[in-house]
Length: 159
Image 1 (cartoon, rainbow, N blue to C red):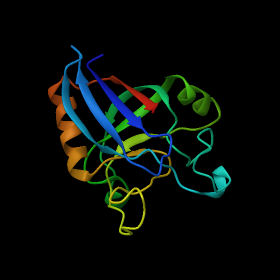
Image 2: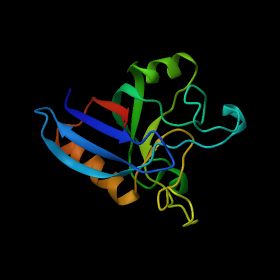
Image 3: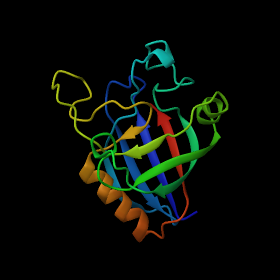
Image 4: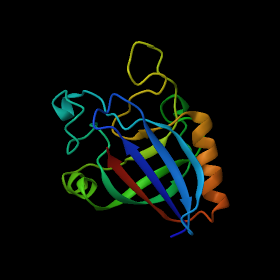
């Protein structure tokens, strides 16, 4: 394993958490930066983002393997930089959710929230991924590459 990402969120996912990156010697090399693990209220999750087992809901806690994947042409949704794929899930709610059909969980940027009355402003809720600012996404990817790239682990926890 060349790196470890730690994402910590309040149990109220309307609020920001933090994301940190550690190298293989467990030295903090990036962060903490604001991150959002809030899903969306869609029909697939009964219009309740808190139902983490279901598609488009809050990012499930637990441990995942991680790898860098290409940037998406959908810059508005994902930002202009490469993304981190959280797959496969290893343990915790992450594994339960994956066994229930959840997949395609990423760490990515994207357009900021435009409604400043939202608790999660300026980050924008996703369909179950972890959102960071575009600038932080760029720095995260650069730090992963400097640490050796390849595969890593992501641990998501609630406090």
